[in-house]
Amino acid sequence: MKKTKVAVLGATGMVGQRFLALLENNPYFEVSALCASERSAGKEYREAVSGRWAVEGEIPEKFAEMPVEKCEPGIDAEIVFGALDSSIAEPIEQAFAKEGYAVSSNTRCHRMCEDIPLVIPEVNAGHLEIIEEQKKNRKWGGFIVTNPNCSTIAMVLGLHPLQKAFGLEKISVTTMQALSGAGYPGVSSLDILDNVIPHIGGEEGKMESEPLKIWGELKGGKFENADMKISAHCNRVNVKDGHLETISLSLKKKASLDEVKKALKEFRAEPQELNLPSAPKQPVILMEEENRPQPRLDRMLEKGMASVVGRIREDKIFDYKMLILGHNTIRGAAGCAILNAELLKAKKYI
Ligand code: NAP
Image (cartoon, rainbow, N blue to C red):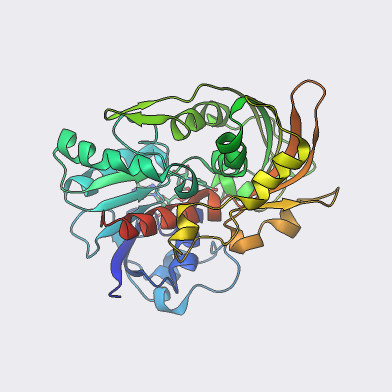
C-alpha cells in the first residue's frame, strides 16, 4: 500500500515528540513535514528539540535532520496531526482544513463543536459520518476530527464495555494525572516534589462534558448527549507518564460482578476487526491483582494503547468501584489521533 504523507503540527512539544516516536514505523503513514512555532522554524529537528527530547530512546534518525517548518498550509502532506498549544491552535487547524487537509487533532479547540466529531475509535467510530456535513457547512475542502482529553480517553475506553452492555447511570471519578500531561516544561519541580496539586485548569469540565458527546447519538446530523451524570476531581501527581483514575459508578441495568468482569474482558471493537496497525489487540485489560494497575508498571501494556482496569469491587454508595490507568501521551493523545487517522483511511474518508 502506498503510504499517505502526514505532517505533525507542534512536532517539538511533548505530544508532538510522541507522534514521531509512534509514526516512525507506521505502515499507513510517512512523515513528510514537521511544524512548530517561529522559535523552532528553520532549524533542524534535532536542534529544535535539543535538551527537551522527553520520549524513551533517541530521536528517530529519519526525523533528526528534517527542517522544522511554520504551521502554514502549503506543506507537502495529506493529513496533519494537531499537537499545538491549544491557545493558538484553533485558527491554524481551521486554515489547514479549509485548504483541503484532513486534520486529526488533540487540542481542545474543536472538541465540542456541533459539526466536528470527538472520536475514540473503539467507542464511536460512527460519529465520523458528520464529516460530510462539516465540509458542506464550512465550505472546507478538508475536515477536522478530534480526540478527547487524555483523562477522558482512559475513562471512556475503559468503561465503554459497561456502557454498551448495561448502560451507565452515574460516574464519580478522581484522577491522579501525570506530569507529561502538562506539556514541556510543565509544572515546576518545586511545586510538585513532595506534593499533589489538587487543580488542573479546565480538566474537570472536560471530563464531565466530553463523555456525554462521545457516548451520545448522532441523529439527523446532530449530536444528542448521552443521558448520564458525571462528577470529576482532577489532581496532578508526581508521576512522569500515565493517568490513574479511581472511579465509582452505577449501572442502568443491574449486573453481577462476574458479568461486569466478563464484559470488560471480552470487549473488542471495529479497530480490532479492521486490524488497524495501531489498534491494541485487547483495548481494555482487566487486572486481578489487588495492587494493580500502577503507572510505572502497567502504562506500556499493549504499547500504551489500552485502558487498564483493576480492583473492581462492589461499592456501598454506587454499584461498583475500580481503578483505570491510561498512558496520557500515547492512548490519551498521539496514539488516539493516529488510530483515528487509520480508521479514516480504512473507511475511505482519506
Ligand atoms: P507542549 O509540550 O507545550 O508543546 C506545544 C507545541 O506547540 C510545541 O511544538 C510548540 O512549538 C508549539 N507552539 C506553541 N506556540 C506556537 C505558535 N504560536 N505557533 C505554532 N506552534 C506553536 O504541549 P503538549 O503537551 O505537547 O500538548 C500539545 C497539545 O495536545 C495541547 O493542545 C494539549 O492540550 C494537548 N494534549 C496534551 C496531552 C498530554 O498528555 N501532554 C494529552 C492530550 C492532549 P515550539 O517548540 O516551537 O515552541
